[in-house]
Length: 103
Image 1 (tube, rainbow, N blue to C red):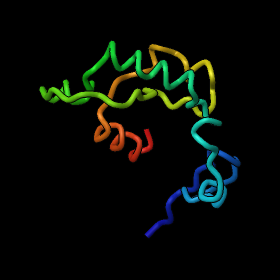
Image 2 (image 1 turned 90 degrees about the horizontal axis):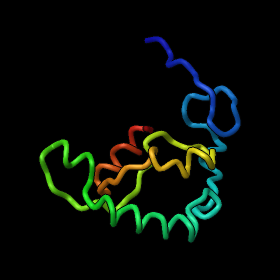
Image 3 (image 1 turned 45 degrees about the horizontal axis):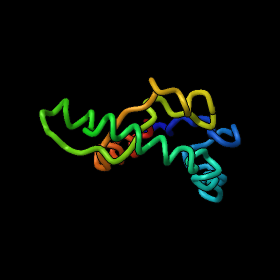
C-alpha cells in the first residue's frame, strides 16, 4: 500500500504526515487568537441578529445557533477574522462537525 503524501504543517511549514509535533505542543490561548472581549460582544450581537443555525435550516430543522463560525478559516488574518461576510451562525453540533473535518 502506498504511503500517504506528506503535506506542510500550518504552523512550522515543515513536511508532515498531518501530526506535526509543534501542533500538539502549542496552541495559543483563545484570547491570543482574537477571541477576546471585543469578539464576545460582537458574537452576542451577531447571534441576536442571526439566531438560527444555517446548517440546520438547510435540513428544515429549527435549531438555535450558539456559535459564530468563520466560513473560511482566518489563520490569524485579522481582516478575515473580522470580515462580517465570513461569519455564519451555527449550533454546536454542526460547528464541531465542520471543525472536525478541518474546514
